[in-house]
Length: 171
Image (tube, rainbow, N blue to C red; front, side):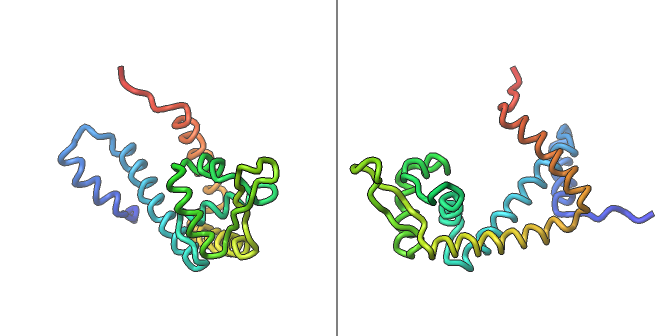
């Protein structure tokens, strides 16, 4: 009977369980695999975005703008949606504007305000990066059958819902 292939998490747990024998190996394996995959997916996103002149944070900004009606938002609304400080948002917007991916314009509804609008170059970069990153993600997930992908999504949704309710803290 062939053995199940082992990954880096299996190797890590072999050693971790010797030091921390009370850990639940299934829980630790799942959490570590999610964390490792998250890091790898972020690197894949960074690589795909960089081919279009964007870093990871800038990619998130242009994609958010691409998703909203009129492709324009206030800097404050963008910062809130992306859970960034206004200072961090200003830095990203400065770099994006310098690269020609966004334009800052007067807010037509509030002459004291500013809106950030995606330019044609920003739209092209967002669309190209999203297409490339999606193709990479699809190649990665092709390791699973469509049925397994649906099952994985159901399981991950359950974990997301539990985490959105807040972690249970022992009393």
